Length: 558
Length: 82
Image (cartoon, rainbow over all chains, first blue to last red; front, top):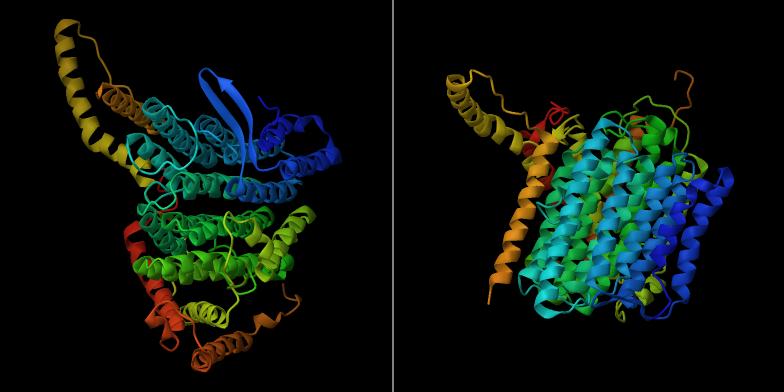
């Protein structure tokens, strides 16, 4: 038995004490926690620690190796930046939930076995939902409920997969799993839900924009990247992931173009960026996996920066709809500048961080002759510039003058954005420290004339397309609307089925019963009303039931 | 807002300048393709201004398709609250 514990536990345990600190002491304490945790991680040599015997299973609660270390480092950067961004917030719920959530994600990354992973997996779900509920609106409450149900479902599938795997192989180690049987398929789907695979994605766009200003910044970093890490650990080289990832890069950008809520636009572009990482995992070569880790690293920072800038706009103006905003560069010049840095980074402009990471994945796709995937990724690269690189800063800070005049973002928000922007530029100009952190040796030079010129061509011609469509009035205006996505299947379809099929049938049964009962006792009987939440509960029960059936089916096999 | 400072971008002719500046840079980038040795993986990358044309066509296609998609998926803002 070793005494080392997971760095995530420092944040989780530390979070509990946050409410005890008054005023400035609390700020200092909040900032100190991620620093402490990171310092502890930094002195922990590569290896496996924290082995605990639970029943017959030896859990490895901490495994530090190159892959977990790079994710651990960027998670610490993210939690520090998010805490700094949230410092002005008086609501302790958000501080506690944010730290616990980040701690759980860090714990998950360093989990050396599947049972430890499952525990942290569920902890991220349960702690993060408070960042949504802390908005304290009816919409946020409902979105949070949907979010936590889907997250818990993912955990449930993971548990089912782990139980089956342990039964079949007796092995709880969290190493390469590969898609080989029902157990690993269940684990794959569990990872896929958290990674927002196509059709399993919509919890992300549903819930993230409903969270608090600081909550969305926390959320953007951890859940989905924990899933990317888990996929990179368990399923590298799974060919199916190339196609899943390519689909993820392409289809969310169509939604991003017509979406009005700018934080939801960012949620769609988050989904698109995850696609690049998933493609890298699917290709599975050293270059590709390096690309995935590097892209997760840079992405966490620039995505947080973009969510921070939009959060600042929401905080100061009270709205985040593209249709209501515009001209804010006059009131919030610093936020505008930081947002543009984030936009340039996500678009992979030369000298910004996305440029040095995304190209690793593109090159790996070309090297392994994934021609169709390469075309799709290139399309998505142009598209991401279009909706994240231009649309976000354009509609918030430029476009027409909305007449809104407000104050610049608070000092702590500006400081967090400045730090994130600095990292975006620093990694873009000098990627070597990032490359040294990657799981495999890097033999790649991002700044070649071909790469710089072709990328500039792609981006500036995309900008030209935007400008031309805008000037000719072809570009679709920002409209207040709800755009149907796959969440319709669980938010509306059950109600439609209920009102058009089940209810008439129920009424008929009801009438028959009443008729029968009136014959017997002459009493009136009514069918209880079932709506929304109850239907979702029913869904979960059905899901559990189907799991049970598959479980028994597996047990019954010789 | 009457006495507010006038910003450079408030003048429509300055926005025009940015647009034509962008057109100029794009033209230069396209022409530049001829003057340096490209290192490419696929033969089509060697075509002059391949990346530019692909980016332009992608974005126009993206917007036009997304616009059509609105007909299918757009609902009232309170669709799920009703």
